[in-house]
Amino acid sequence: MLMDATSPPARVPRHVAIVMDGNGRWANKRFMPRGIGHKAGVDALVKVVQAAADRDIEFLTVFAFSSENWKRPEDEVSGLMSLLVVALAKHLLKLQADGVRIRVVGDLTKVSDKVRHALLDAQANTVDNTRLTLTVAFNYGGRWDIVQACQQAMLAGIEGDQLDEVTLSRFMAMSYAPDPDLFIRTGGEVRLSNFLLWQSAYTELCFTDCLWPDFDGAELDKALADFVMRERRFGDVAALDAGTAPAVSA
Image (tube, rainbow, N blue to C red):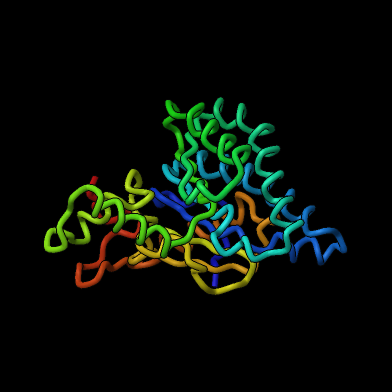
């Protein structure tokens, strides 16, 4: 249950991860095509990125397209790919001016050249920004991430008896960021859906019925207020302050 909040809490998590669920259902409720819901979802994301930056969140990671999304109808997948390219062209300059750095994680070998170039160009054009790191997980899956990290470790010559959690973490797709402090899923579903499985071992989970296109700064504040009220424990470690995260090896 989320708490009511009229203003952002005094302390915020460094890293928030979001599964942006409910675009299709939002459109269906309005008797509109699902594609309209996805467009509304992009508008919601732009607002949430700004809200996160305004609240001094350092890292925001969003599940834009999962490795399982290829199973959706072909026209919907095609529409999502086209929407990504259009959205980046429309919003990139504003994000860049606002100090947002875009990072992309996922298997880009399986997407079209046009989509891959749009994502990598956005990443390159914002590389010097430092206000907020927006990670776009595209054709991403948590199990894929663990497998690719193992493969990269093997290619780097790491022997089996040398491989531990700290070492493997260096090869994960998001090794540049601390593990998420807060994981938000919109749309009423209560599962991780193969998102950031390794990184979310001690992440606080927050599930809301709010459909993603309706999610905004006020909804983010509700999740943040809920987060700071929790007593965080990391295995056998004593409870830490609600707004802090465990140390992350580089």
